[in-house]
Image (cartoon, rainbow, N blue to C red; front, top):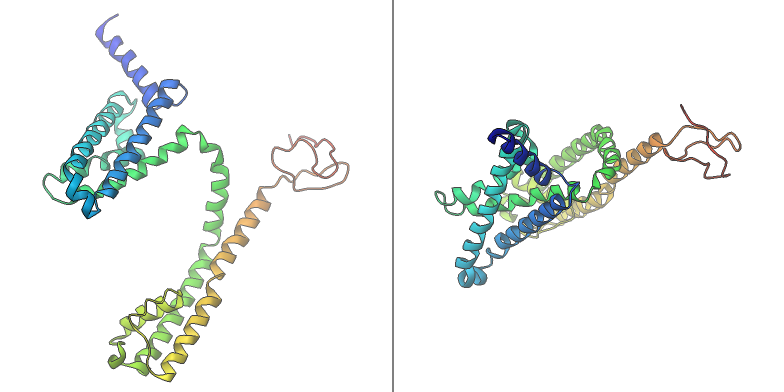
Length: 276
């Protein structure tokens, strides 16, 4: 066996382990990778705590560079054994894999850039492939289609709320004025959005009776509209579920709307005819 065929065999074995989940080694590789990703992200999180950073900052940096070395090696191996390295490098996972190691090297030039390492958490999307959760994509597609179908209604709702916000903001600016914190209409818009979303920071509060009345109206409007986008999306999801239902009619009880893969009627138990 020549060197080229040996190299090809090595690439195939690596590809099956690194990109596949149909082997025990492939599953162990992906699970180990996910554990490393979780640990590295946790390190970035806890390193932002001052007491931990002062006492264990040096150790955390060393461990972080160990993880960076592991991820760098993994990325290079993916490029090496991939059947189409350029296509992998341009893919979603390829870009995320690259971005997950770049911050460590950029931090050598730009201090503080290492905190962008939290982007590694995006690599946890690989868990869908490891745990074979792709069978749930059909349900995810229902949600996606429902969101797309309701996008115009939600945009119209958002536009209407924006108009309400601008009108209330103008009123508050005229009624309260700069002496009560409403120094400009954009500042009033900020207050109105905070109030209408029922957050209520309290950094700006109306002082006049009329202003407090407008504030009360704004709060009531916020509670009134909070369920509208939820209702729109729920209605679209219900319609998508109905559209997904099987249109076959039971020959015994004439019921329709069975599950797609149903073999028997869920009402009378009769066998359903094939739609072929």
